[in-house]
Amino acid sequence: MFRMYSNENFPLPVVEELSRLGCDVMTVEETGKAGQAWPDADVLSFSAAENRVLLTLNRKDFFRLHRQQPDHAGIVACTFDPAFAAQAGRIFEVLQSASDLRGVLLRVNRPSA
Image (cartoon, rainbow, N blue to C red):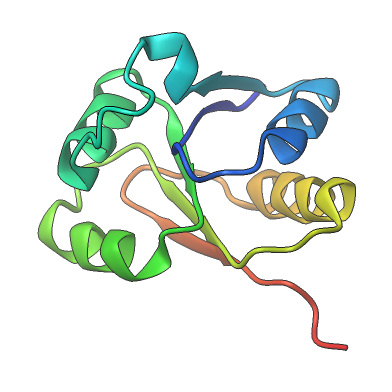
């Protein structure tokens, strides 16, 4: 289904739920880059090379990188939401509604109370 790469700051419970929903989600830990302060531009380049949509909470930096490096496999920028399963569901729903994610920046925000 969807191939994704989760940025180091992305909550593991959301990754696990996305995997349960059938997504192929690679983590920074799986690449051996955890704790290395890998520059965001390199993270985006890696996800593009792997043809994986990037999952991140680091919205400001990746909004900027999206403008600077528009040739990527897609970016899903989220606000933090402690309701991890619900957040994964919203991400999955948004991904399903998109036809082609190449060069696309999607925003998935926590619902307002």
